[in-house]
Amino acid sequence: MSLGVFISVGAWAKPTVMIVATGGTIAGAGASATNSATYTAAKVPVDTLINAVPQIQDLANVKGVQALQIASESITDKELLSIARQVNELVKRSDVNGVVITHGTDTLEETAFFLSLVVHTDKPIVLVGSMRPPSALSADGPLNLYGAVALAASPESKGKGVMMFMNDSILAARDTSKRINIHTNAFSSQWGALGTVVEGKTYWFRQGVKRQTTQSEFNIENIKGDSLPLVQITYGSDSMLPVAYDAYAKAGVKAIINAGTGNGSVPNYLVNTLKNLRQQGLIIVRASRVPDGFVLRNAEQPDDQYDWVVAHDLNPQKARILTALALTKTSDTKEIQRMFWQY
Ligand code: DGL
Picture: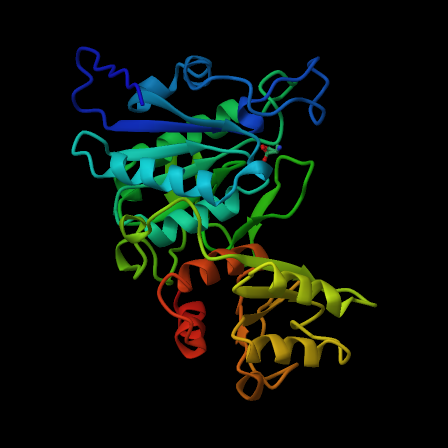
């Protein structure tokens, strides 16, 4: 990792913000300015991203690290762990005040949630992406990057945990997801934004109450190797095939997140399949394909009797992250359920 340190005269009072670039649309390139949705992600290097928004140097001493150059749908445990390890090393440095991670929007929410669970710091970590490539008319990336640096540089961001910054909104890592796949207001949380950044100034209106960063029982420094326990997601619909679940079990999956219909419902013809898999030792987590609300324990299914876990308000993809981390510590369903209540 090569770092260029820019400390200009009179900049001593400014905080230092690291930009860790991983790819995505914010680094994308389209054939023409009207290609706002047709482009190639992960093309533009981090120094170009930084130089394209010189105003960020007014906010902080900014330096860039090219951690990856990948479209985020292709991020696996290997890349996720690599990003977390690099960010963890950066926030431990006394000369770094905050970190911005430029990232594809497809799986930005998983990376943000994972970092909130495994990086122990009170320094701001801000994930940012864009819905349009920099080559497009009214590209959203430059102002998103400016706002993300302002957020990471703000003393008020200390202790606020891992955040996302998109479309002027300060968003919580744990409950924000990508809900629109083609518009700049793609990201939101059913519990609302934490605040906003306007013209480089942060405005706060609420704070998260769930465990994260320094209060987390998980730590990237205790995770070895480049993979996490294997957890997969199944998506509820009509006429589902039990054989798909058995195939996952045969493939060595340790837990299944079932994104059920409604309040995490399981069709009557699938209940025995999931009960059998639980008896074989797999963890069964009832999540929901419905974006808002939360899965109520013992409502649609007798979770106590079946020894199943409920995902609470976490969407299936975040439930997969938390379950994989939980399995690095325990396979006790009561302990795993506690984690879903607390994180
Ligand atoms: N391929 C998608 C990704 O890298 C592009 C979406 C985006 O970054 O906005 O997540």
